[in-house]
Length: 488
Image (cartoon, rainbow, N blue to C red; front, side, top):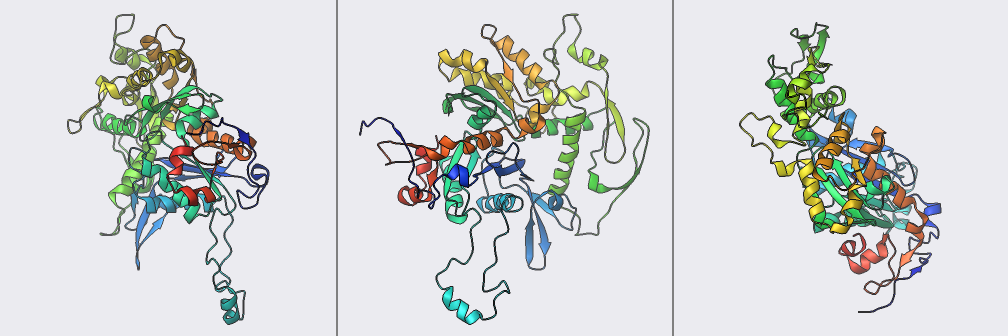
């Protein structure tokens, strides 16, 4: 093995098709696909310009079916509409064809200009016969990223194929001059200004704990659990169905009109109906119900912060009784039914910290205590060097849309201080909702906008002279396997 020391040298001026100062001349794009939302935007900007749902709709048409993307399309109750997601609940892509179309839409709909039509078919040329001879051998379609390098995020548990496929899509299908794949946990730490951190990411489909040390993910310490935002939604469904007066979960699109009613009174609403065979599919209704549940989580749901909800308080009573004595929170359903929620609003999120308090209807097994967030943190720290555990505990970065539940940070700090009474536990979380939701994209935006990220190369012994970006030339030489060596 060559023992040549690592050196930093300037890149070849033709590495990206003749652009010398890439960071000055061209903005890289940052693409952050998630199970619930896909975010895209230009590096160096504060927030992504393109934020589209990761769900897509399929509607029947005369030629078979067509796919629709974006909120305006997938939330419209068209006849026979159905909803699907190209990602699995693990956050790994299952349907690469639809994922590619979704990502392409998120880029072209808001970020890149519409590409010029083909000269033979754009109606601007009269003599097409002569033009056909001139256009022989010319690329028939301009690719969407010919002028923009692409930085893309991935979960820390992504598979080898799941890492190579985005590289192929970006460089071959989209024509990007360069590509980089960044771990979401590392980028979230960067967004908080932390080279070393324990990143607690509470998303829609997963809770993940990612230890990051000096900018590198400690993969053995990465832990995850499905007890996340969607699980809280499932718990809310049980809260509504098991209430003394069951609450009907009616989505917005089902309500034609409604009349205001007093709290607890039956709804006075007129509901929409569809002709047989034209009604939206159950998957469409499930997505619309999730929108209502998200509104409830934002407005009424909360995390109990005074210990375990199923435990006892210092006064000798139970925390459930104490929760009932707290001021209730009202919430109105789309059909006009409204109710005051007291201890119920704490029940849905309690399973994040105490599996014994999870509600169950007897058909689905409840979560295990090892899947709760405190247990995941314990498992993660047990896999890292004992010397860096205090450093990670003093730099806990909380991100993800589901971490915005009221009281979440206070409860997490309380739980971890009980588990680790010696080290100092310090939690960092952005006060801005946008920064919390888009942390990995923001970290990628920071990284891809750094001049050194574009303009410096690392001289190594096993692969010539690579820079941080994977260029198209290197991809052609080494194949998709280069992503495992470059993007660690």
